[in-house]
Image (cartoon, rainbow, N blue to C red; front, side):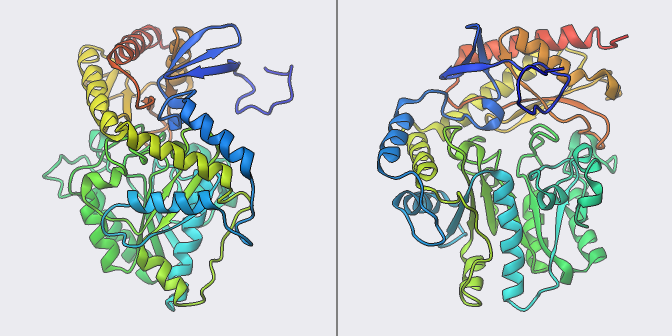
Length: 450
């Protein structure tokens, strides 16, 4: 138990390595040990650590003005970043408007409020519920955890949560209906229509989904037709579609926004993590034209704001990160290196009996761990296999992320997530794959802690 300092850590049973500096894809601890950061902090560091151009942009803005309150005045970096996000917006969103905040949970909280306001302004105040998916994550505020389907985190706060419905995820490896694609007819997508009918379309404001599922399922990618069906169902029921791109956006999957892989236009995009590359806290909610115009033509007032939203320092950093990505064509590189990473994982783990599935898109990859590859049997929860693999990799100079236990049904299931900076090269891929393979074999072959 850590008792020597005054930080409230996430676990009283863990010891935390103190990182003192970063450079490119590496970070270094206080003893000088080097680690390849294959999780980019936590899907945040996309352009690499210690990029001088971003440091220069920070210093320049800090010398001018670091804070203005957006409810009274505006600032140049906020305007410039909003324009850049317009340039990045998927086709079909039209003339967008962006609201800035400090992180992904705040962005999704804003999306919830503005989606409800959209319906209220149009004379539909009963449309106040949000449909999410099980094994999803949208933030740790009460409202965003209510939309989330991360059972272990929901259970300890269940008395506080809002009554929002959920549908199963598009999890072909373990189809909840025990069906096979494509004969399944995309039951997972059509389940949305069933739940809407059950709840009443007049009560549903929006459906929210991570285009590629994040740390609750580590890079689960739906079938090609999935989001087209989702979009049609939302349109038929006057329900907004919110794409939570907090993890999957800003180029990580090889496109600016992951939802673009399916040719579908969301009504709201939420973003954070890679938006400022870890150089400053920053989140954003991007509204399609049809959403904000309903508010503008109604009350004309946006019923949401935050103290640090749109502050010039964070917005200047976000703009510098997006420009750096553009200048170095890192969206393309994320797609190319992601293909190489996933292919290398598939090859290296082909004969590993403890790896049931390798999946992902771009530099957003997941590895599902199993006790028996043939039956897909999971390890007992109390064995804590995923986090033990994470710890073993750390000892060997590799930072990976053990997703939250319970990816299968909210209770059982272990997985490892890999979301490295876009600037990785082939030698980094080789180290990631070989080190992770060794850690999985070491831990899983001796998984029973007794």
